[in-house]
Image 1 (cartoon, rainbow, N blue to C red):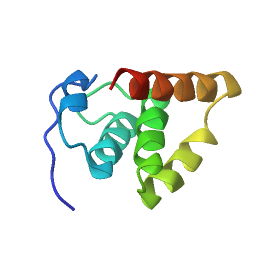
Image 2 (cartoon, one colour; image 1 turned 60 degrees about the horizontal axis):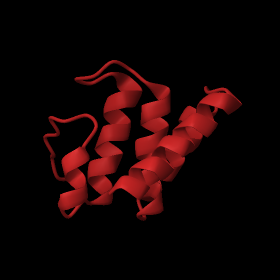
Image 3 (tube, one colour; image 1 turned 60 degrees about the vertical axis):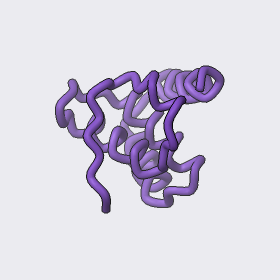
Image 4 (cartoon, rainbow, N blue to C red; image 1 turned 90 degrees about the horizontal axis):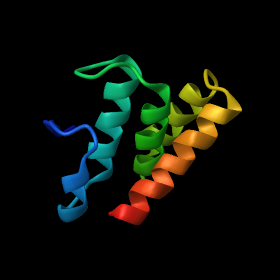
Length: 89
């Protein structure tokens, strides 16, 4: 797998680049384990959701696993954030 260094957690600039599903997947991993950021299940779910929507099968599995640890409200918030990210980029 390629290594991506992501310095801007919000990734506002990604909307202007050729974003691969692997980049979203890496962010999901980073937020799920707290690598370089505070652990955040909502953010992890959001990034896994975006990666899965772009065809990353591992992301779909990770999204399902993390969703099992989340409340319905947290999942809804993660989905809302993913939709918002897509509409802004």
